[in-house]
Image 1: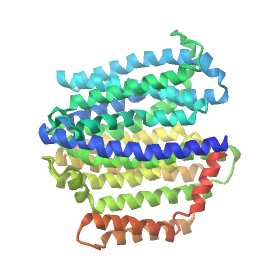
Image 2 (image 1 turned 45 degrees about the vertical axis):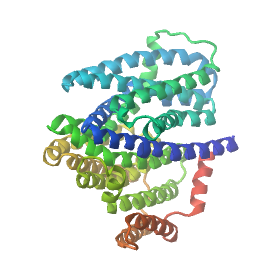
Image 3 (image 1 turned 180 degrees about the horizontal axis):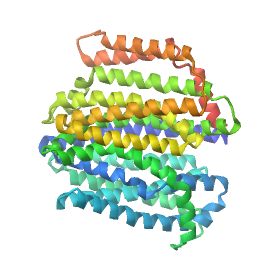
Image 4 (image 1 turned 120 degrees about the horizontal axis):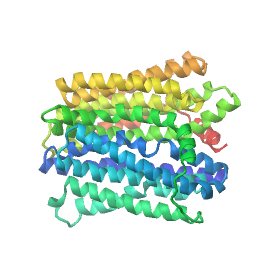
Length: 485
């Protein structure tokens, strides 16, 4: 089992680090560049609609996926007894999700074309929800390698198809938002069929039925998690919707915001994968009443070291990065670079959230986390209303930065207070010294070309991570061993 876990862990990390960032920064960003170069505002409209589908995405799941994984991991027989019931429940949730999405479109005053795109994007989210459900069954059955492949299959298919369209022999004039959305639908549908087949092999039959008692029992257990995800998704994604709706040139501003957000989203996958490693570790330590401080500081140093290195580097070279990726786009790169800088501060704050938010989740402090998330939603909405009217995309990025920093500080404070973690001043001082060193390195200009300078910065910064003691090879092995156990 230990060999199986470690080999699967390495596989999923490699697949996610290689495939998903390349899709976001290569394929998605290239579509942004091509679409905005020919039809300004179209990608901004698409980005806003995607944000809306993500906000209500939790109504497709309501925490059922995690519940299902835990149950099947305890007993494989649960797959036979509960698969049809949960599948039936999800079909009802699909109807509720699509209704909420349509109602939101009406209230926001969407045009017929926007409703058309919203309906396809909603269908895509439905397919993704079912894929995640099928994956939860594979995970519960310990089919880690199959789950790892399914986790990136849709993106891999999109990379192949879109690469042929973008850089192959096809006419580039066919590139459009509608084409991009339908290609996503195709890749999700293929992944849906493959994942369904892999799970169906382990079931005797599928029967759609309505069991109200069963539905209530599952929803009652999963709703606290669902509420937390909904609140966090609102202040993570609502800015793109507000940009597009509040401003006369909202589509353009949303496109500007999307340029930096694509990089921000790719980087956050590092923290997301790290949080997935830490959740069971923290949960086990809390149950066994083991001292938490060593693991908290160990994991914090690793993720914050990576976070500050990437955050400061991208902050200092923000315009060069934007110009390199979107040089032919008819948008204000100075403005998108400024928004990108604020988003990279968000990234550092979210690195902290991936540690301390995960720790509070492992503790089961969902009520506390929901209060923090609710405050985050209120702060974010107020700030967006204020800043977006004044500064557009930059204002939305500022609102996100302030919200993420404040919620991160709140989670750190609450984690230390609730779990009684010792304050290690030596480790705090080490972090300060590390950040000062990285900031000093970012100011140095070694050569005339910025790309050489940023490569040198990341190389020296990586060395400084080890020299300063923020990361030690044995610390990573310790985390993997704990996760393996």
